[in-house]
Each structure stands twice: as C-alpha cells, then as structure tokens.
Picture 1 (cartoon, one colour):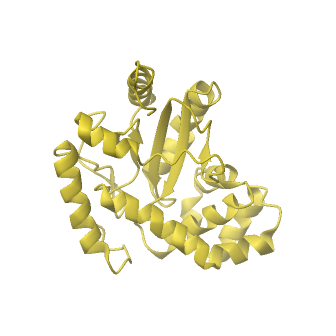
Picture 2: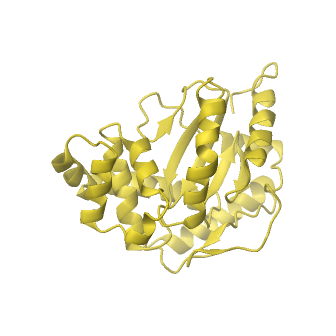
Picture 3: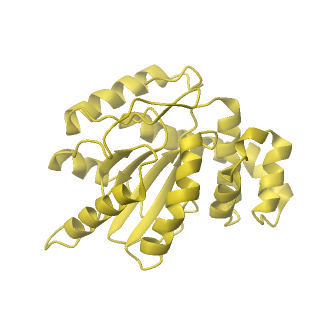
Length: 247
C-alpha cells in the first residue's frame, strides 16, 4: 500500500526495489497494517507468512546490535531482536506502544531474551517526520524510550507534532537540555538518521505501520501479545540451536 505523503524524491525506486527484493527473498509477504489516513487495512492473519531460510537470513542481518544504539533497548547479544518500523501519528503504532510493548519489555527485555530496535518510518507527512527527528534528538540525550512513551500516550497524536508540542513532549520525557534538543532535531544528523531508517524499510518492502521483524521474520500490524510471544519463542529456539546465528 503506497503513501502519497512520503516526501522522498527517490521513493518510487526504493519501493519498487523493496517489493522486488521482498518477493525474491521470502515470497509474497503482506506488511499491510495501517494505511496513510490512519484507517485499518483488511483483516489478516496474526503474522505474515514465514520467510524461507534464505530470506530470513537476509532480514536477520538488519539487526544492528550496536551497544551504543540510542534507539534500542536490551542487551546487544540478546538471542532475539525485534525491529519495529513505526510512525508517531499511526494509531495502531500507539496501540502497540501502550498495550503490547510494555509487556514485551517486562517479560523478555528485562530477562535478556529480547532486544528491541526502533526504526523511524514516518508515512503521514511533515508532522510524522518532525516527530521522528524529535525522537532521535531525545535519544541523543538518552531519553528516546521516554519520548516514545510520551508521544504515543493516549490522545497525544491528536495534539499534533508542531515544534512547540515536540519541545513539550521532550520536557515530559525528561530531556535535560532542551536547547540542544531543538538544535539536534533541526540538524542534518537527525535527517540522515531518518533517511537511513526509511531506506532500510523501503528496501525490504515495508509500506505501512507498524511493521516488525522478530528474529528476521515479518509480523504486520499491532497484533495481540500472543502473536509476539509465539514469534519470540520460535526465534529464541532457532537462535539457541547448535551452530545457529543470533536472531
């Protein structure tokens, strides 16, 4: 599902390349979750079809596992990595952030099983991109997770993501230096980090939010907790098999 609100000048090439790569790597995988306009997509199964081993291996490599990653929580050597492509204006992303993610944190991140790596993937226009840059800027002061929670709080997106509102959210998140936050938010480093995340998502065929990779396997949409628990259990078992690479 394409988005008319994406501003990248090279969007068509990236989308086509991403769809082609996704089709070759793991067959027809539906990433449909939330379309621009924040309307639900057609009902789908709890998770996308499983990738074949080759496709999973390629997607598995997207886990950055950088110990200093400001947009990640959990041990860099955790057996399972969940990569989340999300947009702060996406209602289903907010639902996942409020209802499911805290449970995953308590059950799997705290015991070292799971690492969560966030990718900013704005598809709802200028406000979405501004919020993504603000989240990155909050992360430079180690407050990404707190900003993430504030921005996804019930009713938050309805207030918009203008500059004043983003600074307000940064204050709620406990960002210590708001002047630095504003400078970082408007800087080229934030824009480059956003481009990197977007291009990664387009390259593998992500076209809606939220979309996830759990141990290299795709899950589309704000699925119930049980869907993530099952995927994490499978990925953990695969990662801990003799001779297996971490997922």
